[in-house]
Length: 296
Ligand SMILES: CC(C)(COP(=O)(O)OP(=O)(O)OC[C@H]1O[C@@H](n2cnc3c(N)ncnc32)[C@H](O)[C@@H]1OP(=O)(O)O)[C@@H](O)C(=O)NCCC(=O)NCCS
Image 1: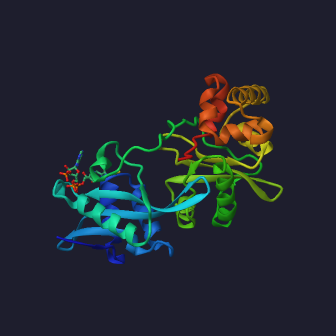
Image 2: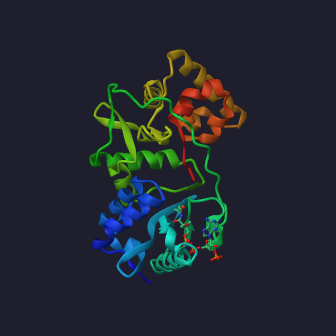
Image 3: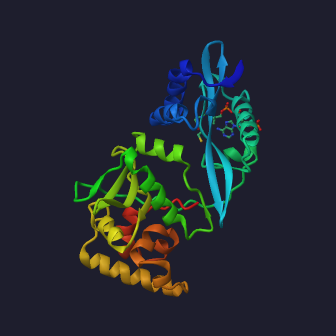
């Protein structure tokens, strides 16, 4: 068996292995990653047994911001071994490849979102809790200004994410290549809210046959947050919004935060999972439907 970087001719087999062992959309994710000019085919390694791909892993480029220091990082994803080849150390070898490649390009840390316990075997430790997923009951219907994101929205999406993460001590702003495939892939849909010709808010949701949840919501200001909350995605009525705004102000005051300093309470609720968790469940429901914040 040989461990080597992925070649275009391997794509079909890598995709089939990922789809069989994980989720079918993983195949498209891997293809989008290697076909992106910033990442390329070197991002994926395979183990081949003769001409069969029997194990694979992909090293993504990431960045982690700690206060105002931006640290280059690696993230291993899209890991799978053919059932007939499990337990022979193939993934251990691929993790070694990934860590070495990451070190060589200057990454200072590794981030991992994966099977609980498994990655401890390769030196990872728990660092940041991910807030529980918040379900969305219905996908958005067409409302004025709410539409699917296109590649032309990428700069606006990056700006919105930066603004949403600005208040966090530790954040993971997506590199351009990552944002590109998140917008391009079919596993999730990025929705944007357009107002006066500019993108004023965004949220990413999986496709309908998955569990519905909303990720990485952003809004530039109170009005944009309100429009997202009142859209069919949030389902809030005017009265719900008023109650939610009041509850958010109270929760912020309890935490010693000045709403005027942190910005509008409704925009803060969307960007701050801990604030959302501090609100009574029945009041937070519309925001919970819109918000699942991955502010790692
Ligand atoms: C999990 C998976 C990737 C392991 O691949 P593998 O090639 O069999 O792994 P290795 O043989 O390199 O094992 C590496 C280590 O993990 C351990 N391990 C393997 N499978 C494990 C499991 N299911 N639970 C706990 N530990 C496991 C091995 O004991 C080994 O530890 P050791 O080196 O200290 O002895 C493979 O079973 C798979 O493809 N599963 C389905 C897809 C998946 O879950 N991917 C990961 C998504 S985050």
